[in-house]
Image 1 (spheres, rainbow, N blue to C red):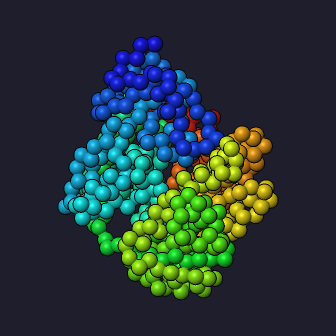
Image 2 (image 1 turned 90 degrees about the horizontal axis):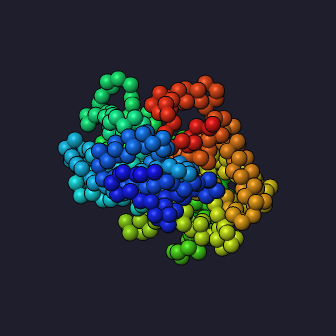
Image 3 (image 1 turned 45 degrees about the horizontal axis):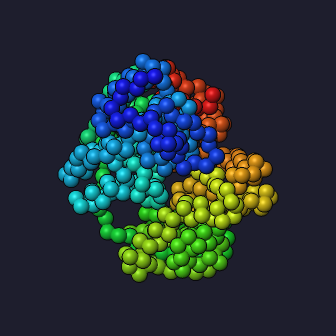
Amino acid sequence: MTIDLPGVITDPDLLKSYRRDEADLCEAGTPLAVIRPESTEQVVEAVKWANANNVKIVPQGARTGLAGGANAIDGCLVISMVNMNQILEVDRSNRIAVVQPGVINADLSRAVIKEGLFYPPDPGSWETSTIGGNVATNAGGMCCVKYGVTTEYVLGLEVVLADGRVLKTGRKTPKGVAGYDLTRLFVGSEGTLGIITEITLSLKPLTPEPLTLVAVFPSTSAAGDAVNRIFTAGLAPSLLELIDQVHLRAIEAYQPMGLNVEAKAVLLAAADTGLDRIAELATAAGASEIWQATDAVEAAELLQARRRAHPAMEKLALSMHEHGGLIIDDIAVPRTRLAELLDEIEAIAAKHEITVGVVGHAGDGNLHPNIVVDRGSEQSIAKGRKVFDEIMEFGLALGGTCTGEHGVGLLKRDWLASELGEVGLDIQRRIKNALDPGQILNPGKVLPS
């Protein structure tokens, strides 16, 4: 087949690197070709070529996702958006930025800080993940407990549809309710409804660095109880993260920084005001030790420890098994049920005699159980999947959701069906069919077959 597209990549060795994102144990195929467009027009050309040749399309960003949403399928055309990486506009007065999808999250954050502005969504992969990928999965991060997830900041989009037409949604104004909210329809759609080529984002005024503290707990459920007390008291932390003992030890082994590895769990909290009251409530919930960062440098180090959680757990898995890997859950429950979920995760791990480390955005009730498996053992993988399913089932029974921020991808299609129910699933399929009747965009992702 002749692939008459600019900058096309067909070298088999290079194609291998575009097969998958960072989700473990999700199937991935080999693409027919990869292109890395530099303009909307080139994306349109690629989509029209794919339609003419009956080739499926898988859009990709930096492939930092954890649900298999960017995994290639055999014979597809991968459209990698990493070369569309320009910050097109930063408007200080209107507090907006217009960016291409390949812009790295941290690069945007640093650029707007120079203008006295702040872009709050900050996923753990912020140094490598792209804004387009963040929008496609509706990513969260450590600051979303106060500021909300990505969708709260997306004012408008430019999207190439499955038939090659270019759709512009939304606005640049602070307010606007004209027509159906198509912008939010595409946010979190994981490349199944269209390919995002431009994003208009709202920004916040830059605020002073918040104060930061660490509370040490004798159990994960005690930390969960502290979270409930903090929010019941009406406090508004800008960050409230939980790190369990498995992660503390993994992080310290990955990059030593003097963490208390005997603690069963710690809460990392930051707030503009009310930090003393947070400390009081943590103590009432059973915290055995509380200490506060003395300056911005120390506070930044604490946040960096939290960002090291994923690579640290990957290293731990490899230290435990020659072919060690992780199945990463992303479940969110009402904050009042967090302690119950933490207790149950510990019980499930003990029942199946498997290592499960828990880290997450406790202030949102959003936890990431990391299940350690041996990829070389079918028995270990089966056990890991069983643990994953039991955690998911319990979380949904608490009124939770199968994904707080990572997306559905391949990993959670069946659980999405359980969560949505028959009517919800039918409506989602109707939307997909209306926008992509040929099922050309990221087939097999999100919706179960």
